[in-house]
Amino acid sequence: MEIDSARVESSVWIGNKRYRALLSGWYFSWTEIDKRNREKKTISVPVSEVIGVKEGRVEIQTQKKVEDTDLDFTLFYVKRNSRGNGHGLSWSLGRTQFCCPSRGVRDQWITQLRTTLKTHSPSRPHRLLVFINPFGGKKMGKQIFHSLVAPLFELAGISSHVVVTERANQARDYILKKDLTGFDGVICVGGDGMFSELLHGMIGRTQQDAGVSEHDPTVMLQPCDLHIGIIPAGSTDCVCFATVGINDPVTSTLHIIIGDSQPLDVCSVHYQNTLVRYSVSMVGYGFYGDVLAESERHRWMGPLRYDYSGFMVYLCNRSYPGIVQYLPADSHISSPRDKTRCLSGCRVCSESKERLFPHFDSSSSLYSTSQCNSELEGEWVTIEGRFKCVSLTCMSSSCPRSPNGLSPSAHLADGTADLIMVRETNPLGFLTFLHRHTNKQDQFDLPFVEVHRVKAVRFSLPPGAIEEDEEEYEEEADREIQTSAERELEDPEKLCSGNIAGHSHQHLAGWKEKGSETSRLKGQGFVCGPCCTKPRLVSVWNCDGEILPHREISCRVHGQLVRLFARGIENSTMQ
Image (tube, rainbow, N blue to C red; front, side, top):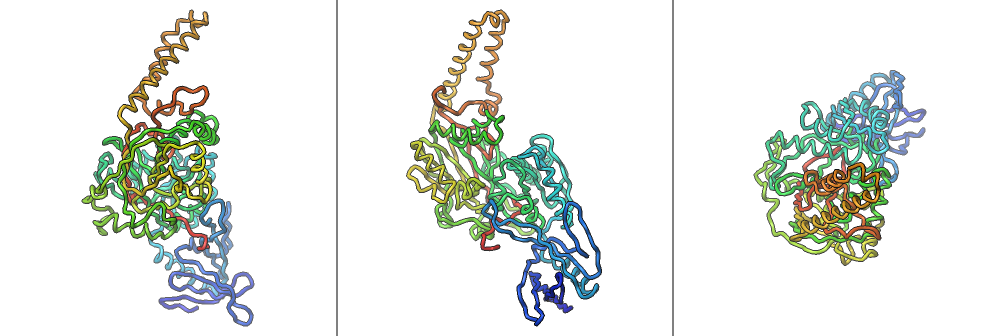
C-alpha cells in the first residue's frame, strides 16, 4: 500500500475481480484490472458523498447484518439513479465491499478514508432535532422515519432527538421555547404545513435571540444559524420538490447526512405594522385564494377537494378589483422571462450573497442590520385594475403536477420574488393560462398576463370595496335569517318550541362576528353558479396553503434568510 500526503493506493478485490483503489484529493476511485494488468472500468466517488466506512461485510436492511472479517471493509456512498417522477435526480445508498491483501492494509484504508471524510466534510450534522407529523399525508410519517431515515442516520453516526407532534404548531412552539444548544439542524417529517411550522419557529427564535422585532416591516431580519431538513411525508411537498427536484425520503435523508446547504429566500407578509405570516412558496389572491377557501368547505373529500374546488371556482370566472404596488428588482441581474433555470450551483444565487449582505461580518454568525432600509429604496410602480389572480412566489413553486411551476425562471436565493398578475379575461383565456403550467409552453406569453421580478409588494383595495362587500353579506345574512324564520313559522312544532328568536340571533351573530376573521373567511362560499348569490367584490389571500385574515397586505423578500439541507435541483447531465 502506497501512502503519501496527497494519495493512497493499493490493490483490492471485489468478488473475484482485482481493482486498483485510489484515494486522491477529493475523490476515492477503484479501477478494474484484467488478467493482463490492463485498466478497464473506473468508478469514482467524491469523498464529500461518502456516507460511512465500516469494518467487515455490512448490509443495511431492516436489521443490520455484520460479518466481521480481517480483510474486508464496506464503503457506503451516494448513488445517483435515473430520473423518477420528479425533474431532479433520485439518490440511493450505494454499497461496495472491498477485500484487502492484509488486515494492516484494511485498517489503513479505513483510517485514511475516515480522516479524509472529516477533513473534507466539516459541516456534516452530528445531532438533529426531528419532528414527525403522524397525521400528514397518508399518515406514514413515523413509518417513513423509522424504516428509511433512522437506519441511514445510524450508519452515518448521526444522533437524533425525535418529537412526534400531537397538535398544530407544537413544533413551532417547541423551537421558540426550548433550548436548542447542541443541535446542528431541525428536521421535519411531513408536508409543507409541517415545514411552515419549523420555518416560523426558526425565524421567530432567531429574531427573538437577536432582539429584532418581526413586526417591523422595514427591519432586516437575521439569518438563521440552524439548517432545516425536509423528509417528504405529506399530502403536499412542494418546498421539497422545488429545492431537491423529487419527493423521495431517501434522497432527502442523504442530502441531510452529507450536510448539503441551500440558502432560501423568505417573504414576510405584514398587515400594517403586524407580522401575519412567512412564505417561501406562494402568496396568491383571487383564483388561488378562492380555491383554498372553497376547499375548506369540502375537507371531507380529502385531497380530491382541491380538484373539485378548482373546477368549481374556474366555472365562476371571477375577477377582483385591486391596486398593486411593487418595487422592481435589478433587471440586469435576472428576469422572470430569461428562460434560465435555478439549478444546483446556480450562478445568480451564489453571486447574490455579497449584494444582499454588503456588511457581512465573518467573525459573527449574524449579519449587520445597518442596511435595514436599503432594500426598500427605489421607485415603486403602481398598477390598478381587475385581476383574475395576483401571485407572488419566491421560488419556481414546481410540483409533480406542474414540473416547471408558477414561475419557471424564479431563483431560490437571489433576494427577489416574481409577481404574476393575470388581468380580467374570458374563461378560455384563463384556462389556457392554467393549462400552460402543466406543459412546456410559456404561461407568461399571453396578452392579459404580466410578470415582474420584485423586492417588495403592496396590495390594497379600491376605496369602498370592503364596505360594499360587507354590506352585501350583511344583507345576505338578513335574507337568510328571514327565510329561516319563515320556514319555522310554517312548521307548528318548531314554532311551539320557542327557538326562533334564539336561532335567528345566533345565526346573525355568526355572520356579523368581527372577532374571528379567519374562521369567517374560511366559511364563506366562493363558488357562484345558477343558485349562488351576487358575486363577491373581494377575495382572500392564500399564503402557502393558509388563508390570511387580511386583504390589504405588504410583502417583502428577505434574501437567504434560512438554509435547507439541500443543494438545489441537479441537472440530469450530472448523473
